[in-house]
Length: 330
Image (tube, rainbow, N blue to C red; front, top):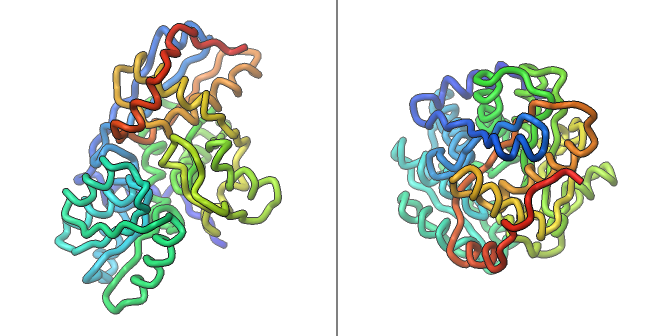
């Protein structure tokens, strides 16, 4: 398989620049003081549709149009943010879209996807949604934009780290969450080219650790059922054959317990004063564990993947106040 390059991501940046937002990079002097490192947060909750997924979906559609392959109908399967991204970006170019989602998906994400003009079909499980989108993709004039396993999706997601390093300069490590691996793959490509000495590190919920299992066994492993995790952006059942090739090139990978997801969702919300999805807490805990092993101060970049979170999840996150325990490395 020929790997994507920085040039692919730079082209994606050119395609989508007029459609997406230049999201802010945030810092917390208090957190830096407590942990003893220089931490930068790329806040994709401020992106169109409230998540990084807007980049990959938009890039894919513009690429299709550029190559005179504009479809009559777009479909995808999603746990939420990618569905919104396809719905939003397809509406920009006047293309009807249908999104297959599991009925247990975040209610706010289902509602938002519908509001962008897409037809939403709710399925009993993510596995059934995956089956239905494959069937729909065979219909004439229909194009399937996968949520991660597509080169143009990966190139679009790679613009997150591309933008970040171009703004703040070289870093010692880049941390991003892993669902299907699209964001992490794009992050790897961009960081390897723009900050060659940086370590690229992934993270996913321990309760949804198909990527970690795949890396351990050196073959793609699939979860048997919908995982029980608050990080709904990382509830994919398996990584893709394309993304897996990039995941194998990571410097490290962490599996994060639910208690730490809750802890960092609370603390990042409090310190950065922004809405943070539980999925965005994954790389923060991975970074904490990584930083505890370092002997000197490091500059690190953490991708906060999105800020779409419904009331039910918010109530679970804030059921107990964890802000009494100050963040620390040991």
